[in-house]
Length: 614
Image 1 (cartoon, rainbow, N blue to C red):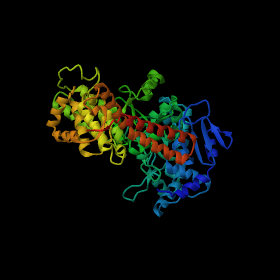
Image 2 (image 1 turned 45 degrees about the vertical axis):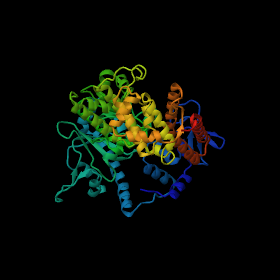
Image 3 (image 1 turned 135 degrees about the vertical axis):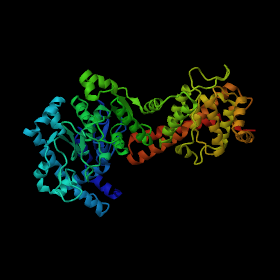
Image 4 (image 1 turned 90 degrees about the vertical axis):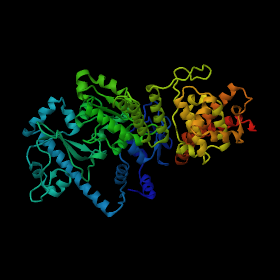
């Protein structure tokens, strides 16, 4: 749903930001603003300011910044539309409906909230009655105390086809079916009947804490062990996480969010004092659920059982996340001992045993590497090639170009150490430093890098750098990541750069003579010759009479400066945008710092240019 800027501006104007934030954060009047200890990070001296006139908050410590809508999405974990609706309700505004069908759906959903609350109250009442004895006994056996029962709203559905329907007859069968509480037979000739029967129940809530569905566990033998509500106008299981409403505020204090396999795992962790846990609802983790998790933490931790099913679920989550990961957004993984869930581990060894695992999660890249390494034997070239292809495919799935290149580099570096390779003869003067892998990944110029000078690096500058690499090929492997990041716009020059990187990847030591042979074999000798005949900028590393040590130092400095420039330009552009939006001192200072860094990089580069090449 798209909302007009005019509507959002009016909504912000009608919301007193200090009153909204003051509900959960103690604000102190400071002139025309309010200040507080930042709710987004731990601090003793207030650096968090709220400005009602400008309608934004800003923390000078952690750089948290936003308006009334972002406060509800970032501080409370609400979805954007839920935040807008809550503010609109408080301001007496009506959120525009995009079309009549969406309006009708919204009206139906609004009527179902009352139905679900009534069902929840009835289930809870049954748990305390005579028929709820078996459910209470199960809870006692699981060690779930009275406080936890109340907090999570446990209830009981009697083993009868029409008890709930009879209790909620005032709503009518159609609404109860639409809410997922009754099942309507397909033939249409029989009466609808209760969906949940003979089960322990607990509600599933939306980010605002409203009941939207139920999960129900069978108490005796039978399948399925857990039965969830079907998708309804209120409930989409692929876009919902169990306990998200309670885990969101808990995650801000804990600085993490934990994903476990089942709802009872969430409840057991909460009772043990770990309230920042959530669980998917009977399906593999979806893209929408990952989006919810990243609202709460940049690196959600998946804590799954060590059995085959748990590890398969962890890998599915890892693969599902790959297209969306980015700088500051990934996943971590914790593998529990085989045969134990979180509750088992806490009961056997205490909360400290689980915390020790949670404190050192396995990074996403490590989880993927280990999964593929354990997928089968690696005795033959074909098997090793299969491993390489699978890892390349995983890296290729990543949308962010910088992260994709880092994963590719990491995978190739590990493959380089794993697979046998031909050893080059010892050349003590031009060998890689001990312990340093000669791998360098192939890397296309990123979209961000292509923005430099629109077409990439200046052709004369590109030619000078490539000439330097041809003169000093031993540096290619040592500084491959920076070389790969050079924003080369010319197709042929980029092809030559990539060939140099691939040569460094497969040969432990390169000298000009060996490199010339490799380039001739790769069919790029003509590109090299054209480059040597090209007139361009002169650096020490392009002059035959220059001191070799100085030439090497200058070449490394130029490469690193040019590789860093796209990121510096992007950061400066983002800081300028923040300054225009916020207009505060912190944004101004950041813009000035980045501008000075860019100017210093340009100055440093200019001092290395000696004039035109002959």
